[in-house]
Length: 263
Image (cartoon, rainbow, N blue to C red):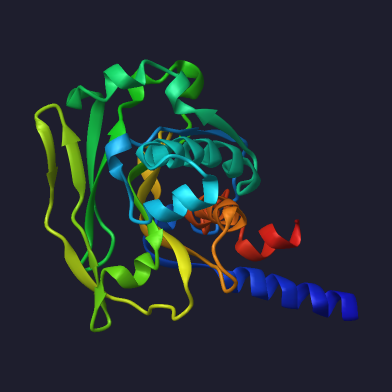
């Protein structure tokens, strides 16, 4: 019994250090649904959609040159999404979307995407660009897909953009063949943490090509607290928590409690 109690306390501590604040929408057609074996294509997010606010931590913790710090985090995060998605989901085969076609050529043509406008809540409306189904091979034409619109990483990102109990959510950054622009932002209430943390603000959509509908979409703020100072271990835990939060409450996602119990 004492071992069980100790395990519960440890898990509660870990989950407390790895927290999330969500403004997301889960399609009611997928709520409570049992998942069946299927592919999940993880499409690469654009380099410009990644914003890093704490360059000094990247340089100090990973001993990389400041000029290469963004490229280092981009490559590490991209690889982490592929690797850690396997342990954060059930009955899914993870597919690297970049290997399905010439990605660098595809992203330059807006005709390769279908535009999805979705009201996440009363104040938050997001626009997503999902690669068209006909671009996929027949083998993957009924897969799920993860598309990340933008991701901001930094210390205390839940508090940096907040004011008077409200958090400002920047508008969607949209890259088109004609240039990049940003839609208007919105203010929403937030509850910040007093504990120092490494955080990420990730806007994303999980798409079901078989049903031509979304599974889950919106904005997730992931936080990895570091009461004893930030280190490479903070980043490693942080990168693992991001996909865990993205897939939570989907038919194939693993809850944080079960995830840490299995470790």
